[in-house]
Amino acid sequence: MKPWMVSVSVVFFFLVSACATTPVPVGERANPVVQTLENASYRIAFEPKKTGGNFFRIFALTVQNKGSGDIEIDWNRTRYLYEGKEAAGFVFQGITPADVSAGSIPSDVVPGGGTYFREIAPHRLIAFAPIRDKSIAPGKSGISAGPLPGGRNGISLALRKDGKLTRETLEVSIEVLY
Image 1 (cartoon, rainbow, N blue to C red):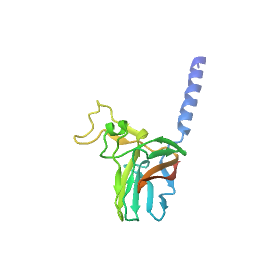
Image 2: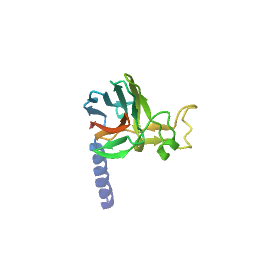
Image 3: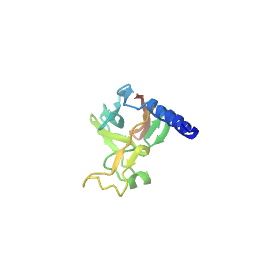
Image 4: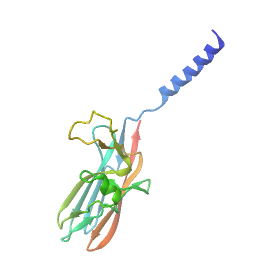
């Protein structure tokens, strides 16, 4: 065998064996499964959700108002947290890219005694299908929530009650499984 063929064979062997040993993620799990916070005024639940696969892509947010007055959720001040640091805002169905870029996402109101539910995704993890992608069905969006990264994922939720702004922080730890 020629020396160059031996060298190529050795390099090929190492490349193939390196690829064969690289772990491939098979799913994720969250701890806790649902993070809750409760006080005399409200109860908040924050839960990562898997949509169409084994990986978390969105969060389910539930706010239960225990009082008689309204609670306002200020989306322009609410932030996605990654590893304890502010990483982006949140987006959800019904808002426009113009709302996000202008910082004019309408607030949501939880009436006294009411319960609010919304699925939200971190703005920085949104995936956009290329304009040339013709596989998107008519009436469907070319925007989807990208996978949530492993590590501490959370929300700094901006709530306004009786004119006073309060921030509540909830986090879950997402573990990537191999």
